[in-house]
Length: 109
Length: 114
Image 1 (cartoon, rainbow over the protein chains, first blue to last red):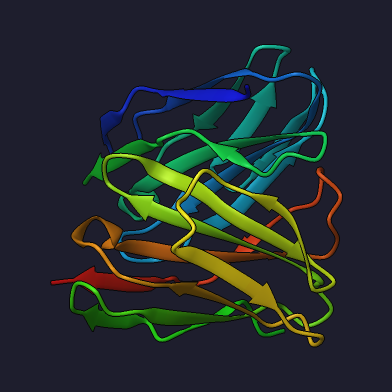
Image 2 (image 1 turned 180 degrees about the vertical axis):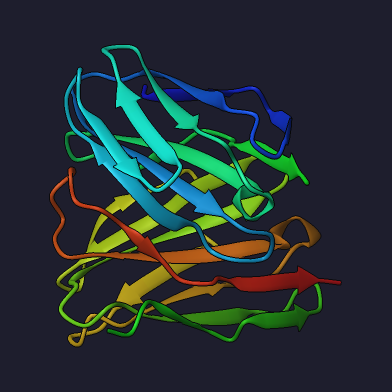
């Protein structure tokens, strides 16, 4: 059974203080690992897809990386508007997306 | 390009009633999935439809059902509502049913059962 564990559950950063969020996964044959951002009361917003170990994707202050067991979402010099819950999900074969419970990020000015 | 549209955005129902939620996918997308999101359980998969056929179903009771129409729009129905059904119901659309295809979510329907 596919499993996704995200850590930490919550993270509080000062503006400009870079950090990383972790997504550990157990899956039989990864077809894709997805990162989403979710603001309170809204649907998840797609950020990145990673397909194979060693792959990296960047968007503004965010950079996602992938190994055979985990993915990291690096946040460089975060701003208050980066505050949100970040969700990681995996897909293997014909199974639906399996989500982690997310990391709730707060960036304080 | 319009995103995924879910209606209604908010709903308050009484225990025992039934409810129907609607999802219009991104134009051209043929795959629609439904998820239930609660604070304790996170996002849990309900079902997935592609070309009007249910491809996958999550571990939810038979009170939860869905369907997809020929224009790819989808509905989900919950009968005999229970207090525990209170949640944010999210619909996601994908261009295809391939497992490595990105899914784009709507804003969700917030269902409150009283």
